[in-house]
Amino acid sequence: MVVFVTDLIYIAVIARAIGWNYETTPISIEIWILLAIFGVILFSERVLTHRFPLYPRVYILVQSALAITMFYRAPMLDFLGMLLLPLCFQAVQFFHTPLGFVWIGVLILALSGMMIIGPEWSAGLTTIVTGAGTGFLMGSFAYLITRTEQRQGENQRMFGDLQQAYRQLKDSAAQAEALAAETERHRLVRELHDSLTQTLFSMNLAVQSAQLSINDDPSTAEEHLARLQNLTRNAASEVQALLGRAPHWRLARGGLVAAIQQLAEERQAQDGLQITIEATGERDLPELVKGNLYRIAQEALNNIARHADIKQALVRLCLADPIASLEIIDHGSGFDPASPQPAGGIGMIGMAERAREIDWKLEILSCPGKGTHIRLVEKEP
Image 1 (tube, rainbow, N blue to C red):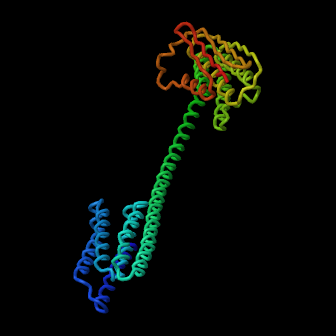
Image 2: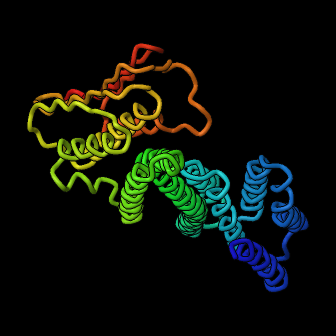
Image 3: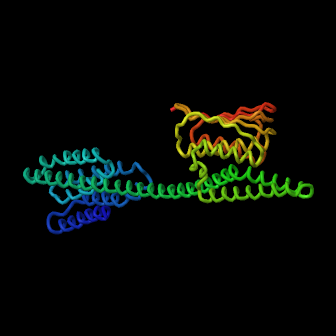
């Protein structure tokens, strides 16, 4: 639109020059040549600017020199002042502020000589004042258009940034959903390992014992089958608790100490493991802390029953202020904590994850032939 108006102003000047040429004194060939050159440069500006980024500065200089020359060579042709309009607009458009407005001021000062060489002082002053007002008005118009284009560009960039942020948000949501699914899967694996591994191991032992004694001592076989039935009920209860997302259901029956005591009774009934419990203090812990401590104790006792080749263990629970602790100690076969776990083993990994989850410090001290000491200590507040 602005380009069209600029071209239209030049065409209007040419039309007025033709009318002037027939109505009053003919315009000299020199002015017509200058007008033609002005027009060629005007219409070629857009093409040359795309090819040469610095061309607008040369364009403004040349066009301004042509306009001033025409004003001084033909001061009676007042309509030539219309050529200031596209020049003032383009000066602000090319040079921006404040240099564009400084250039407009320089143009007005250069034309002030018309007051001296013009036919009438008052007419020259009117031309200068009118040209100055019109020039600065066109410059202000160019400034507003430039600012509008800049705002549009900023809005487009902001819109692009918003679209990019929206895409990233969707990607993050998908990643969060996948992470949540993976976290839930890992939780289920950990709960299954903590709750059912030892029960299934004991069930397998009960079945083997029943098979060995079924011919020699049927009454003993019945005891093993009864034990197997009890283990099956326990496994079913564990699965129900897991599906109900209540991994710490035991703790509701009497707290952490009572849950560990019941766990010790189950281990003794299933595996003959005799567990001594030493509990001191009465401080209540958050449910998540109590649940994870219970699961760590359960895993440690499961490992003792399966791997320690010993039937005694000690669980020491201290709930006194300011620092609580939990220890599981046995004097069995032990192991090397630095050695890699067997393929598929997640017991020690699960302990470490549960300790990090409640922000407790986990220490596993063990040596082959010298037993194992697992110690969890609450971090100082």
